[in-house]
Image 1 (cartoon, rainbow, N blue to C red):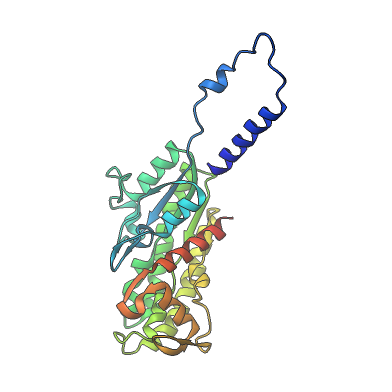
Image 2: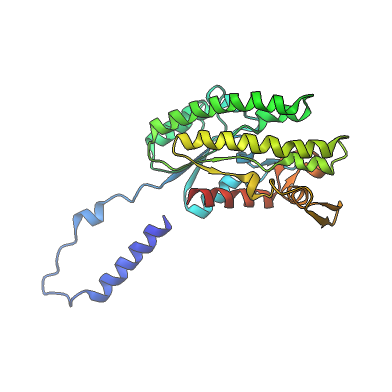
Length: 282
């Protein structure tokens, strides 16, 4: 780790500056210092959906998980799968080179038990909720779906905590991509959907944050950090869409939803999510 390397370098420097002149018979080198293995590299285990894989309309790019791993000096074990739901974590094969044919949850538990873990992130639930945006009763649909997500997340966190009681776990939510329906012509009643989405995300985030809290996990409210709770009466001048709510303009910049009806983050969006994860994990 960078911090360990810095301390080691300082110790070497101090030893060189304070050592006494060599004696006639040099002291033998410490066998323990020469044969000691290097410290184990800490790992970061990422589970979840396409937000963690970095998938987008142009293919796979750098995800928030890769950004966090680089910034924290951790080795990333990314088990996330495109399109995963909360139920899939424990029922479908994980993705990535470290999956080993196991589910995301089983592979994560194995990694936590076998390695020195510094961080686990969980980003899940978006694919569960997506159909509710097109439901005749979106709020009722979301209420039912959130209850199922809570159950699945609780099962996941129970096993992660059993495997590594003290590991830092950060659960994530999402940008309120449906705010983009305000300007997206694919949604005839887009402004109504955008307004409803504020309530839907507030309810989802409140309940899912409480679930993570039950297991001593941190929570990155990405909806909040990407402006999702801003009043829709607060307007800004957008270069493409003209005068629109500031929260809509922000989600248009951080995701591809406004112009491509694609829920995935832009590079700026992944950077914003990484910053939210880092802040939540402090």
